[in-house]
Image 1 (cartoon, rainbow, N blue to C red):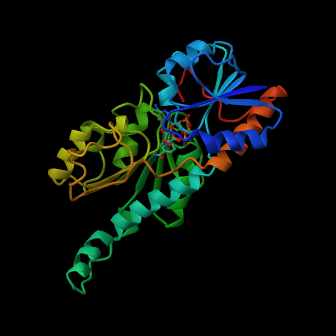
Image 2 (cartoon, helix red, strand yellow; image 1 turned 60 degrees about the vertical axis):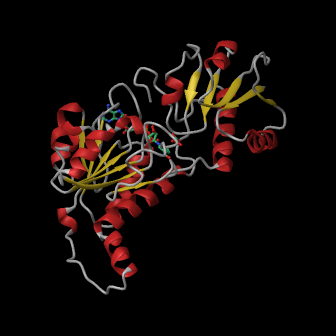
Length: 306
Ligand code: NDP
Ligand code: OXD
């Protein structure tokens, strides 16, 4: 079995060492133009040239959950695209979203500012019932986040493409139920894949349907959000603020207004990191299953784009 490694912005050595240790019988090489044909590839945002030179490839293993960078390319028709299926990401996502939600809900920024001035002050307790949390995307990550948020006894709404039943979550589905989902939510968490249907989904028209004083947590992709619409809604006082982990342009340019906005918290696309050892174990397990002719989880439906 020959495996090609072609991952942009990723240090290849530890991945190659981990893959070789797990699959000593395989030939595993860092891709370079003109490399021999491979059976499988481990990829992250590969160049089109890689795919053009590997028309026979059986499967591409994406070292992230989101496959939007791959879906922009011309991928050989027979190649299965397999994404990371949790692999240690969902618990990180749950931590990140709960941290952002609780920091906002309990007004810890205000306490921090008061404490910095030596002030011993109290803010009026808020009611959880008045802070319903809406989660867009009830997939591997969205469901884990929904469960974690529900543990803190917030009312939880969820929205997905197909109807779902998730314990403790009031579920909405499809474009027709989006307005009801938004109207029932005050904090909105985006955990959608980036597709033609979801690009720009966080825009004036949708964000202004959240309950007054709403808050946005975007941990999916920057292109879900129309950035200026968010700033306008916060500056007008309709939305209370946002925590953003992903941006249209990454790294976020130094001159971007998000950096200094007092009601926007920025983190550098770090809400759920790819964990190398877990990811290698998952990828290797799936490669061996495919070799045996068995089905694997996390295969992308190319028509849906995720
Ligand atoms: P999944 O594919 O498991 O889940 C996607 C969910 O979105 C599904 O519930 C799906 O509905 C729903 N969905 C897709 N399209 C629509 C639509 N048009 N309308 C309504 N719902 C829709 O993905 P994951 O949970 O694993 O990951 C989600 C995203 O999180 C990734 O695509 C990636 O972009 C992002 N991510 C960000 C990271 C970060 O560090 N910031 C790290 C990892 C992932 P249905 O269930 O009906 O198919
Ligand atoms: C992912 C990511 O999609 O890191 O896994 O954003």
